[in-house]
Image 1 (cartoon, rainbow over the protein chains, first blue to last red):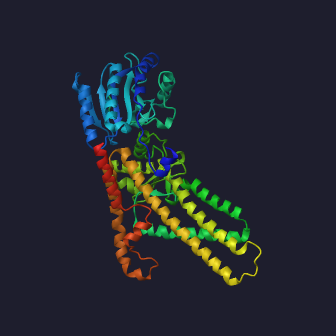
Image 2: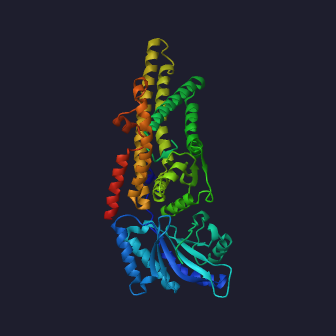
Amino acid sequence: MGLLDVLRGRSRQVEPNLDQIFALPSAAVTLETACSLVPTGHGGICFKAGSGPADRTAGTEITELLSGDIDPTSIKRVDDDLGFTWLVIDDPDLSSLVTRLHGANTTLAEHGLGPHLLCAAVGFTDAPGSSGAAPCYLVYLFKQGTFYPFAPRDNERRDNELELRLRAQLADDLPIEPDLTRWLALWGLPVS
Amino acid sequence: MPQRSIETDHGLTSRMFVVGLLLVVLYGAIMTGLFFVIHSLAIILVIGIGAIFAQYWFSARIALFSMHAKVVTPEEEPKLHAMIDRLCALANVPKPQVAVSETDLPNAFATGRSPKAAVICATRGIMQRLPDEELEAVLAHELSHVVHRDVAVMTIASSVGMLAGLISRIAMYGMAFGGGGNRNDSGGQIVLIELGAMVVSFLIYIVSWLLTLALSRYRELSADRSGAILIGKPSVLASALQRITGDIARIPSRDLRRVETMNAFFFAPAISGKSLHGLLATHPSLEVRLAKLAELERELGQA
């Protein structure tokens, strides 16, 4: 916000930073060796669907684009109880999951929905034979271009200890969101 | 002017106008009185600017106190916090404090001297009356006020007018009593200059007050626009506006009919003319706001 924007009472729409998300696969390696966490193969993008034709075409186009040659049941559209829309993509291979998430983001951004992108989340769970940490998510904030861990537990509680541990482990692999108040609680996220 | 509310309430607006005017006159009177006691323009200006600055600096606390609002934690109001969390992530702004006022009047406001010290407050009434989607639209409107720094802009705008009036008044007193030399001025001339000073400063107060109100209406439309763009659905904000103003408009209309026969005895008529109301309102009329939002809806559709 420059002075001119303040005087004119305008706010600029914030375009998302899409590319940092490609850092995820290398972070997953660290998670597996250091914390015995493996990807669940589920990932999702959360955005605020607007009104108008742009949004509708974007929706159909993404579904077509992403389910073209792969199993069409592997992508679904879910509306959550706060009025945000999730595109949930299932793909057992993390690199290909990230590529498809990025493809979906790019399509949304091309349709002018970039400012309405909130976050992307990728699920992680205990590696077979270990226990204690699951489930948790790595959430990517589009506007900040940063990640944070989210470990939801029953009764809308978060495993903050695990989240802070993951932050320490991942500090070298991912740009972690430094402002803890931006670590959104995404209760009931449909990524599973 | 710490409060940036989303509703339009005719009775409240006219009362606020009278109160505001009285405040300005009081402010002028105090400053003039001080001039006779202190005899120093510099000290008076420092006091005046200091008072305005204090009002700006403590705007959040003053507004919360006058609305009986209190800051709430995410545990107390999980849904309100979740909504604001997500709006802030979308707009990429730091999260303001969240407050709730336990009144039934459906209203919301944003206050605070800077985006970092901002507070967004919703009343219990608006949280109960609006569906989630519309409450989110109202919060997006209030968040836009924070992003636009409307508290700072409106404080500066209203104090510039006050200071201009004050300075012109003091300057004219200076002409009357200062300047040394001509002690053979007749008393009549001094009274005349004093009257002139009062009229001029009063006119400056009035004009600056009207301009401030016009600016406030423009800022409301801007916040409507930014808020609607943030959530991507102008129609939802329009629907929230209709619901709030619709609800409120019904209540005073019953009151006013009963008061109508008393109008002749009132200082200002309880039922104000439309043009007068338009000029004196801090908020644009519902029709204007809805028309602007419909325009935006079409723009977004074409994009």
